Amino acid sequence: MGVGLKKSNFFVEKIREVAEPLCQAENFELVHLEVVSFNQEKIVRFFLDKPGGITLEDCVYASRQLGDLIDVYIENIGKYRLEVSSPGPNRPLKKKEDFLRFKGERVKIETAELIENKKKFTGILEIINDDSVVIAVDGKKVEIKDHAISKAILAGQ
Image 1 (cartoon, rainbow, N blue to C red):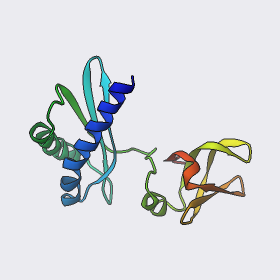
Image 2: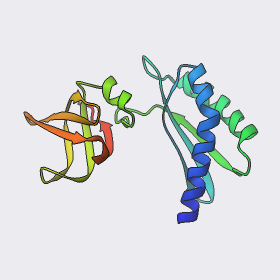
Image 3: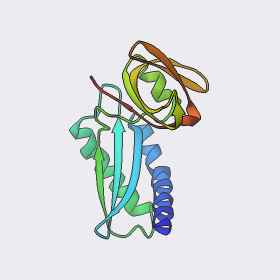
Image 4: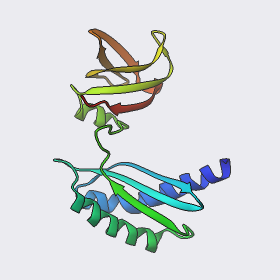
């Protein structure tokens, strides 16, 4: 499994390098990119967003453009299927900018270490510090250091 994972990470970085300029030019935010293998086929998944939300037409356009870029610039990728979509209501929060943008929203955060004897928190994102975030969970404030966050997503209502 380790070899396949390294190869997938290699493709993710190479694809990101060719996709970022297109995303920036089209005002798309590349929220997440992954390459997974399924039934001996690679699936390249892009999750895009933009101010006001991504539309189906945006996804179709981006799919055509990204597919062409991958075909031209990514050698040895072999057969793959391309999927382009919105990150949806459970959008991942990966960068500090994501946390700033969604301040005041309901989030789910999983941690790599125990904080107050828990690893899973759902609450309102209240404060974003240089090295931590504070969420309100059942009326109580919980500070979570950035390095402890293993996963963070919007929780919806």
